[in-house]
Amino acid sequence: MPPVDSFVENPHWNWFIVVYFFLGGIAGGSAFIGGLAALVGGDRMKPVLHWTALIPFPLLAISGLLLIADLGRPERFWHMMIQNQTWWPMFKYWSPMSYGSWLLLIFSGLAFVNFAAAIIGGRQGGFLGRFSWLPRVVGGGVLGTVFQILLLIFGYLFASYTGALVTATNQPIWSDTTMLGALFFISGVSAALSILILLTGWRSHDHYIVDRLETVDNWAMLLELVLIGLFLAFLGSIAWTFLAHRYGLTLLIGTVLLGLLVPLFLHWQPRLLGRTTPMLAAALALLGGYALRYAIVYAGQEIPIGGRMMG
View (cartoon, rainbow, N blue to C red):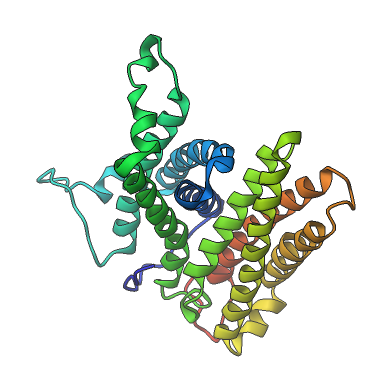
């Protein structure tokens, strides 16, 4: 994730932003997984490709609405990308907000094309049949490969951007670590894998896919545990202040224990609860992904650190 310069305006982020970070992470993680599956997954991963084409765009649409609703003047949302006097496109390379606005727009466009291709499928008649060429273009050949690589890249950028955004502020905790971009990205991938397990796990003939998804998710959750450890290590002495606060406890209990350790245990004991075992593990992992963002977003605004609290 490319670095972004710090900004000094004190954010006042509420649950709109928490949900935006959570849904955006799933959207980016899904596109990243879909890109990998298209490039190296083979024919047996076609159900994964189908779902990873359907998931990102609706979540990005909701994310955009949440961002607009969170603005003080939501009717002026277009000012983030268009100059109000000249009507020319505007990109402020020094502004994380401007960077994120354009990233959301471009990624949403790619996700919409992928979404439309999945909806159209192999339809031959009717209005949608006129666009039956679209799935062939994005699903194979040189153009399809380039398209999937772009989805993979922008999925990574968007999933990690939200973590880089909070790091780019001057808020305590957020600005005391460089791990949040990587942490939010791998958490988004794990949450997306959990969604895919929930969507495919109820079908008896998808055991192979569920097993593959669980294997990848195990590695993602182990990496997420490592990144959480590094995040706390980078906080240094203020880590104890964070962990003693309710938001630190939310991270430890909601994310580390319930969202990572318990799902890992359930993956390693697949017969413990029968066919509901992977479903429970996936649901808990999703809860942990939300708890991670909730804890970090509110901790940076509400935990006073040596008089540096900006909120």
